[in-house]
Image (cartoon, rainbow, N blue to C red; front, side):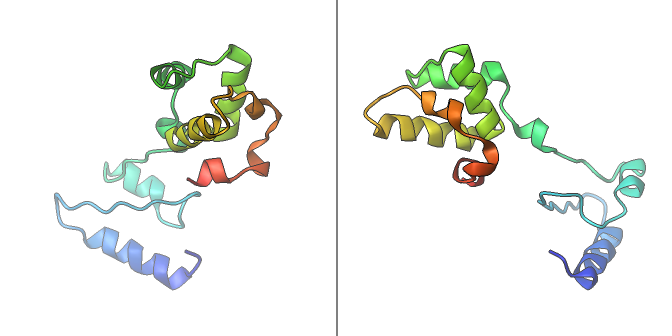
Length: 121
């Protein structure tokens, strides 16, 4: 959202929320809200991209459970491409299965900016 008046309204709503009420906002960048003030008052909990990304071990275990263990280099490349997002990893897994069960070595050649489909899924 880029509308200043819309963000002002959301800020107003945040200030008026009764105790126990919650408002979840999902964005790709920090919204123009008084985040520091809300955090200092204990009224803000932020979940960042790194908090949602799978760790190397988690990704390795997921792929192993799906019978697609990867060598270290390919796993690292796949994590770079998907930024650790579980959905991206799973879509890469499905793409590998559809390619006749070949390993996901194609991930080595990809860069995140060139294939947003894995990230946006």
